[in-house]
Amino acid sequence: MKSIARLISLLLLAGSVSACASEQPNSLKTPWGKWYFAFTTPKALPAQVTLLKLLDVDGYASTYRTIDQPQGINVGKWSERNSAGNTQFNKADRLLQIMIFCWDSIIDKKVYQSTLFFTQDTWNKMTTPYPDVLEPAKNAYRQTMLIGLAPEGKVRVWLRQYGHSDIPLNDTRITTVSGKDLDMCKGETNFPNGYEYSESIKKFVSGKKYPYGTW
Image 1 (spheres, rainbow, N blue to C red):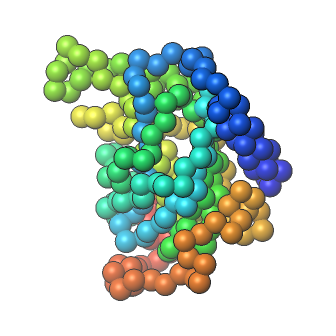
Image 2 (cartoon, rainbow, N blue to C red):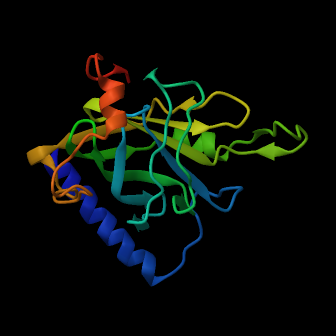
């Protein structure tokens, strides 16, 4: 697992170098300018994303250190329509192959490193139009990806389809590691002095059994 993460990190680094060298057209044409990603967590079970890298379908890499953080209100399980944080900084130009990111699970009091491998199914869903809810004669696109971060280091991923339920990306291969298996995320944390539960977290988890739901 660690060797896979290291290989991905090297690919991302190589991609970022080549991406700076020249601008290439998208190998998979998209009918939109950008796509967006947003993070969500269960209510009162917070997490923070500290570092994220993308490798796109053309082999170009992007690194994000300024990241819009998770927000969520679900209790007990994910919803058919999940609330999420903003996407002001969480955006990209090309379709993605791999996403790898570091996150602090405050409720678990540990750092996780998650890697998502995307498939043709994701690209098809993002580039295929559906009728706009407000103007059915117009096309809308699934340009926003939602990423759920839950206790036990569990990660889920969906595409948002406005006016409808979120679409699970079940073909996405997701791997998550922590502790000695961290590679890119070793030392990446917003809590170098340790984690403390806020009063709202303490109140929410009181009397509940970890992991506080089915995620």
